[in-house]
Each structure stands twice: as structure tokens, then as C-alpha cells.
Amino acid sequence: MPPLPALTHLLYLHGFRSSPQSMKARKMAALVAQRWPALHWWCPQLPPSPAQAATLIDEGTAGWPSATMAVIGSSLGGFYATWLAQRRHCRAVLINPAVEPARDLARHIGEQSSWHDPAERFFFEPHFVDELRALEVGALRHPERLLAVIATGDEVLDWREMQARYAGAQQRIVPGSDHALSDFDDHLPAILGFLGLAPEGPPLH
Image (cartoon, rainbow, N blue to C red; front, top):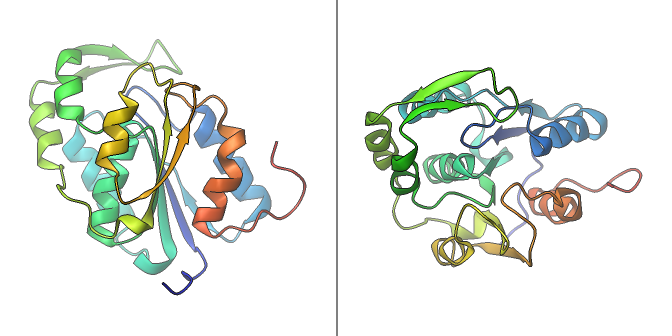
């Protein structure tokens, strides 16, 4: 497979109850601003409705070139990132990605609070479960364009389910760690390498 062209656009998609203020999103934003200022970076606040989130993502990346764009998604954001990667045939890094969010989030219907601002509330509506089902993509096309970073210590999702879902993709199985991938810094070189971003400058830690 010939080397992929240099990245020009990078999207970050946060998880359920999360935001662009997540640790991983902020670290990536700072790194891009510092080392690759010409790279177009976008990390939107996703609405609670999966259908509205998909529309936001679709419209926001409509003008992006598939060959030189990539998406990083964490948890529910990994589910959305998989959906986008299948539509656009682009590269994707999936961090502890949700495999069956329609099943898992059905028990979270009702009022929820944001992780990063507990005063911020939203309502997870029953029909959002159907909206999640509508975004399921089935068998993966071009799994070689996907990197799944999967922590065996994930306390929210079953790492074996993630491993099976992304069979055929590049996988980085992390012993221990947690759902948030708190040791994110340790995996940055592999993630950046997969995206074709040269680890220029001082050490990433």
C-alpha cells in the first residue's frame, strides 16, 4: 500500500457526557497548535442527539478532502468516527470506541450532566437510541485505515468486544489503563505515527 498523503485536516470527537475540554482533546489541540499550525483542527461540542451530531459532523467536514483528512474519536466519539470513516474513506483513530452504544446508552435515558461542568445538564431522549441504531455501519470497509487503541482496564466498555469489532484494523491493546485512557501521553507517538504526523520537536511527555 503506497504511503498516504500528508494530513491537512484533523477532527476530534469526544464521548458521551464529555466535551472539547476533555484531557485528550485539549492535549491534541495544544499539540496541533504548537507543532502543526497549518493543520486544520476542529473539535466541536457534539449535541446530545446522535442525528444532530451526525449532521454537524457531516456538514462541518463536507469540504474536507478525504485523502488528507483524519478523525480521532473517543468512546461514543469513536462510534461516530467509525461512521464518518466509512462514509469518507478516511483515516481514523478510535480510542476505547463504543461498539454498541444503542444497547449501552438505553439505560442512560433521562437527565444527564456534563463531566467537565456538572452544572450543565442535558436530556438523553428515548428516541436517541433509534438515532444511534441508524448510524451503525456494519462490516468495516478499509479496516487498514483504522487504528483502535483499546485498554483492557476499561471500566465502562468490554475491551474484548472492541477487539472483535475492529478485527482487521490496526490495534494497540493497552494492558490496564482505563476508559479515559489516562496514560494518553504514552500512546501519542503511535497515534501520531499512524496519522503520518512526524514527531518533531521535544519529547511528547
